[in-house]
Image (cartoon, rainbow, N blue to C red; front, side):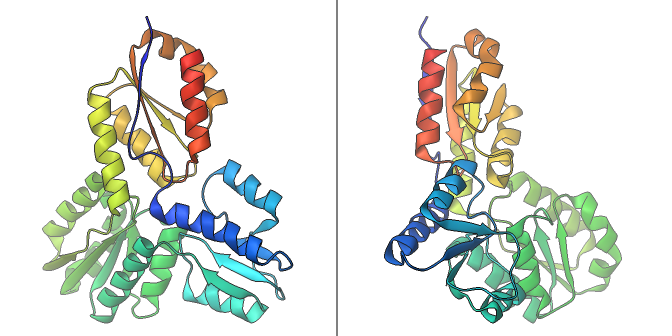
Length: 288
């Protein structure tokens, strides 16, 4: 029997990622004689990073004391301190921070200025969260990061003693994570200001994928294991129906039995997954 293969409408590059990739490429095309760098991986996808490297767009993993050419700030954003270091090194800065991420940074700063105890819902080590926290810390030392309500317990005394708590969220977080943290804060805080800064693209991608999962025998999530929004997708969907998370079509062979045993297979992909990778997965599924 032929398989029923469905592709999610909201799969692949989101607006912020598409903007970052296209602008970086355009920068190199318009400045062929200039060196173009990106501080950190532009997006969490090895194929795209290799493509940029082949174009002459190099990834910097640390800021040199002296540099030249253009340095791109990736979609995750950077701290003001890091941006100043890039300037001092001698680079021309092109800021490609996602507009949605900028809004989270601005909201965190606003709350810090207004003397809220700022809670950032997200993974402390994620570059987006690192930048949000750094911006807020310029105005207040009352800033905490937590990916679970358990991680907030160490700040319980400080939160209880403070009059107001302000909450912002990493753009690619799950709504369930935000809700659990709000439930906890409600039990200990006097006043809470919540800014649900999960981006619209993340919400639409997750909601559509959940609906697909409810009507599918198997879900295939395509994207980097380092991508927060992709791993969250896989986590959400695995609670609904059998789910596999792959980075490329070659990995499908590891799940050949699952594929053969299931009739309706749906595919979604993270915000940093290129269309050609998604297309290859679809073709490989058909051949399997």
